[in-house]
Length: 277
Figure 1 (tube, rainbow, N blue to C red):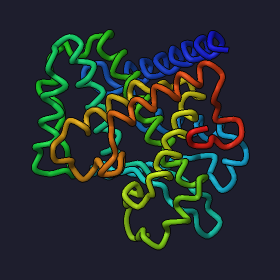
Figure 2 (figure 1 turned 90 degrees about the vertical axis):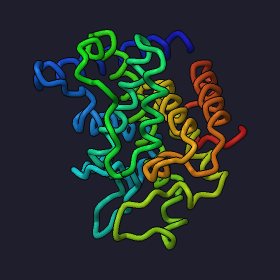
Figure 3 (figure 1 turned 120 degrees about the vertical axis):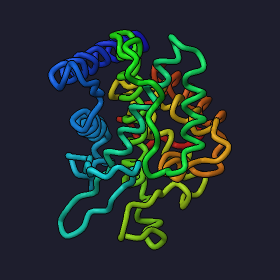
């Protein structure tokens, strides 16, 4: 079972990178463009939907992602109305942010300390609506095939986990349960409205959903570590984790779910996972 899942994961990861590389090359070789853009986000969202248990798919739009062109980093579940099914809304600014965090982590492999400096820059930014890019990104060393391979892999994993968590708020009934506390006027993070058990349930379901799509947890751990290193969290962090979450414990839980998944002890396609089960 573990060998079969490992082979499946490797093959799909290679397919993702091949698609990302083709997109990167076709877009513009001179100007650096990240391979993980809107089309990749939509594709990952559709795959997350397709791998869910059918009972979790009820009420969800098969085209699970609604992209918007806003520069402010935001991601949130959006309720369906007037015949429209539920989706996850993601801003261009949110994808830009994930690309930059993933890139900084990839650069850190060739320039130790780069990631920590970028995290500090994010934490000290005056405007959370438009987070800064990593420093000196015109350096050609930062755009080699090896660096961009790591960047694309980490970013796709971040995208998958954040999308999957927000999808889970629909099929775990968190959105309907907390609808009265959330305004329809603009996208708002649901995380700080959740009870702790609801948050844990969402993390578990989202992790298994991502793993079924052959997207591992390392990117999510990197994203959570980024937030954990900030003494003062920017507003966009609330769209990713609740204010008081223990991120070291969270990352350990991701490791445990991944271990169980590859040993055949957990799956997003079976009955709803039970926390602690």
